[in-house]
Amino acid sequence: MNYLVYFILLGFLTPVLGISLEPELLRGSNDLMKSFNLIPSDLKKDKKKVDKTPVIWGGNTLTQEERLVNGFQMKAFILGGGAYITHKKIQLTAREIEVIGDDALIGNLKGQVIVEDKENGATLIASKGVYDKMAGTVTLDHKPMLLHKKDGKTVKIHCESIVRYLEEARTVLTGKVIVTSLDFRVFGEDAVYLEKEDRIDLTNEPFLFSENRFLQGKTLSYFVKQGSIKLEGDSTIYQVGYESEKKKLDESKKKKPKETEVISEDKSSSEKNTKVRILTIFSGDTLTHKNKSGNTESSTAMNGNAFMYRSDSEFKASEIESKQNNKLVISRGNVTFLDKVNFYRMEGGFLEYSKEKGYSYLTENPQIFFLDEKTLEEKGNLAAVYIERFDEKKEAVARGNVQIQTQSSKASGEFATFYEEEDKLILEGNPTLTRDNTKVSAGKIIIYPNEDKAILSDGLKVIGNDQKN
Image 1 (cartoon, rainbow, N blue to C red):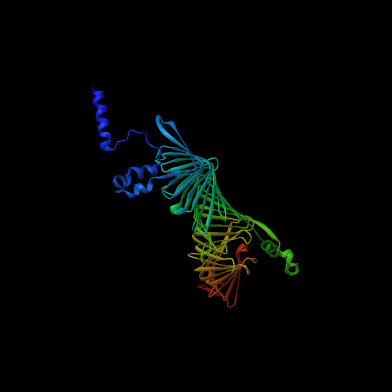
Image 2 (image 1 turned 120 degrees about the vertical axis):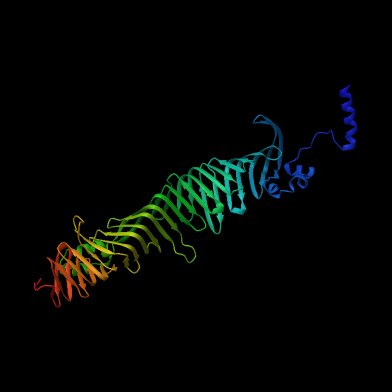
């Protein structure tokens, strides 16, 4: 009796309320919203929610079937021939897409998969992928590639797997990551591309190759728009260059008589300009490299325990910055420069070196230490207000309150010139010399630090007693 009443009431209410007993027609998520008018009543209050919903999916062919997904019976739509899903402004296309649920909760993309985010200038390409609406992600496998083009910069990234967070414009790349740009190539195991911050972060000790350079650190960040690189944690640069063998020729001159020097100067220019391979190792805590941009020159800076090694020299400082393709070097904090060819060491708080001018400027308590040619032990030192060095002349000039210490004497004056090849100091400007408790003055004092010898001339005078030097 109860069943009979139910069917009578249902038959009466059907024409009144407009309820149809016919089976529902197949519709995509966009058709559902239009036919049932859900946007005005349910979603109009929150337009952002509408923007985040992928309301369009389709293709040239469609096949529908029922699937058991995670224990739930759901509709599956197999799209072919130009199949696509649109997530906000992001377009996902493939040769075939298997859509789970009317609202495309899951999309399995197969063959010629392309994810295009025009707003952020990113295109992802793979042979297989999975779209997850609830997570807002696309996962791509089988050696996918990310191509990023923006502001005239192009970057390609290859790896084994990609997870793209569509709302965040963030991409996580794993397995044999290779980042390629116009200037270099980076290799690593894992990377995160933060497009809104214009930055690619690589961990697990990535390394970078560029022309004649190899860089490595614990982590690497590449700022795409700026074209700059930041390496942190035991950062190291290995750089190969070719330079004239002039230093070795000069060293040979130093030990030959003047007659031999004249003959060597008459040698052919081709022999004097012989190029030798030079390896430079540059290490420290954090390395930052900026490419040339507009009127700004390229620069490389090493911060924290900066150390530069070459076969002929060593360079240490708290910070070393190289500009103009290594033509200008600026060092700050506990600066030490060791010249292994001319056997001296320079120390100070600030050093600026111009390769084009062949000029160095050292200040903030600068000193020069004169070293033994065989053991590199200190045999004397010079201190001043500031010190200048001239590459071509191989001379260093010290000015202001010059103090010289050798093994057996002390000397002072207003300025001094150090001739590196002759291992000779000329002290001028009211110079004085003290040895064995005797202080003398002269117009000029010539000191040979390694030989611990001094020559005084031009008005020798003993100060403070009647003894003579």
